[in-house]
Image 1 (cartoon, protein in one colour):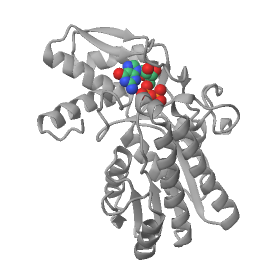
Image 2 (spheres, rainbow, N blue to C red):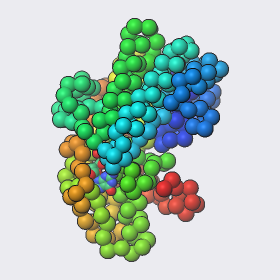
Image 3 (cartoon, rainbow, N blue to C red):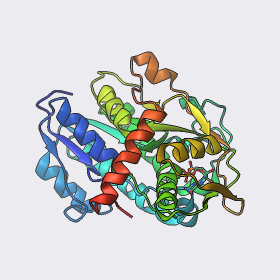
Image 4 (cartoon, protein in one colour):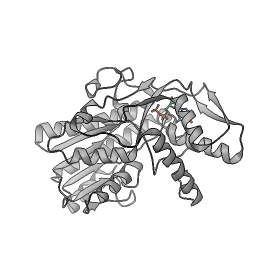
Length: 315
Ligand code: GDP
């Protein structure tokens, strides 16, 4: 990828897409093309075809997706499958048809089997059944990464994929029901602190293990992959450090300074028991994360408070 390349970032208003745009700008990539959801519906193949034909980008970075936490996914597997498969197929295939030479597709480590070996290597893909709570999303992302792989192998375009672990950071979804655990915990502890509540309700048993990566680290990894001449088809990206949900709750409680007591709601799902990705491939290529969980959490709580204060938080 060159500094003069025209780069299309799909999903530039989302947490990942906006971080990628910030990282591109910071590194001097000035020729970036974006469209809002209103201007371009990625579910519409005809509209995607017309967009690519008009703009003819050199590079596309596909960050757009319908995303959500365990509550949103398990209640909406049909929408998560349908929308994400269309977004992936349209954004990738229409890019190929328009002659886009290079494309990076963003997925998630939830594409791996529920009981994959831990830490999960890229080779675990499609080796056993998926986690049911996010099966729709996973199937859609697997289809997208496979389309990139097939086009690269059969048609000679440089289309490749990056699978990030659980992300957090600016622009996250702070919805109590549909959000992921980390932003939801920040909101729950902050709300309890401000209201002086005695308890904070959290989900499941607290025993599942998760790994968290700050979205600015992911954006740096995206640029790192795009600057490689011959990247692997599929690469995991994560912090390499896992914590139990209970430990995470303790860290968020500390970062917010909330004195409330945690109450675990065992009627809510735990999801997959452990989800740590093997990041030895990306590390062997020369990339490492820079923002540790404590620093990232402190920053994110500060950003959450500022966003609540100025009314810009997406609730
Ligand atoms: P997952 O990583 O795909 O399972 O999705 P989440 O980020 O939504 O949830 C991760 C884990 O955090 C699961 O074990 C949840 O049960 C647990 N958890 C605890 N409290 C909450 C909460 O308030 N919201 C969410 N979304 N998850 C929670």
